[in-house]
Amino acid sequence: MTVRANSSGGPVVSTLLILGGTADARALAAAVLARRPGMRVVTSLAGRTAAPNLPEGEVVTGGFGGAAGLADYIAAEGVDALIDATHPFAAEISKSAVEAATIAHIPRLVLARLPWVFVQNAAVQHVRNINAAKSTLETDGKRVFLAIGRQEINQFNSLKDRFFLLRFVDPPQTAPDFLQCQVLTGRPGTLEDERSILQQFAIDTLVAKNGGSDASRAKIDAALELGIRVILIDPPAPPPPPHADSVEGALAWLDGL
Ligand code: NAP
Image (cartoon, rainbow, N blue to C red; front, side):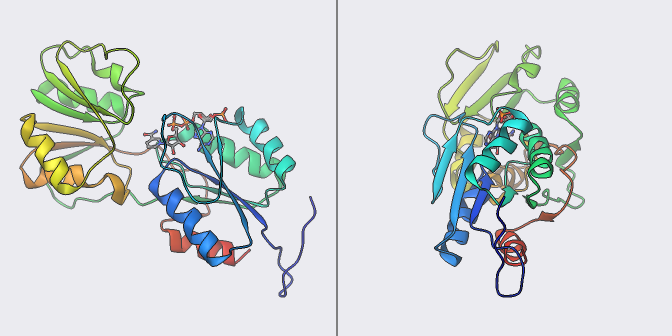
């Protein structure tokens, strides 16, 4: 890899790879391009949604084939900095990012919001993982909004004696294997949207991942406003540092390279 130097002797980042799939990743791509119009900014998406919200700059889709594949991509494209702005629950790609950055000898940053904190709020139950969320539901919750995406929902389908409201970005290819459920298609909405969904389906329990993002927070606020119980799943252990918890923090890291 050729490393150019800036006026203070530090390396110049000319190609930045952002691992995306989040609102923060999109905001970061736009902010970097606004600040450094000459920089090549590539955002990578897993390719799970049919019509993703696209960021500014270049986009690649569909995965790299593990850490080795990502390291190969970094070398082939001359990527000289990597920002992992994936969702805090996307643990596999974050692990690949750590390994690939090490193999390719490029700096890597994690951009992730801090988890939401609800101090002494009796309506919020924090659980360690999906299994714990299911165990918690076994004792209570007749009409449940299971707002955790689509990948792990089947872990709940043995709970036959209750209604589940599911929401996916794209319509599912096959009907979810639930005795009583309704599927909504779409992305997280505004406080008003979420309030009206919770009321329309007479939801008594919301199960969600504690992703920390503003983009998915409204459903929690709406539930708490309506006195609905919230089961909040803790994120897995974060990837190794350095971390930034805001787009501004990530820009500052980039400026310091
Ligand atoms: P994951 O389990 O960590 O990743 C599984 C595989 O998908 C990875 O090994 C990688 O394939 C590919 N992949 C994931 N994110 C990628 C990216 N940004 N660019 C290129 N390849 C990617 O991920 P996940 O939990 O399925 O999440 C998939 C995407 O959805 C992530 O980008 C994440 O930001 C977004 N998302 C996830 C959640 C969630 O709750 N998990 C919520 C909102 C958004 P290869 O090994 O072939 O490279």
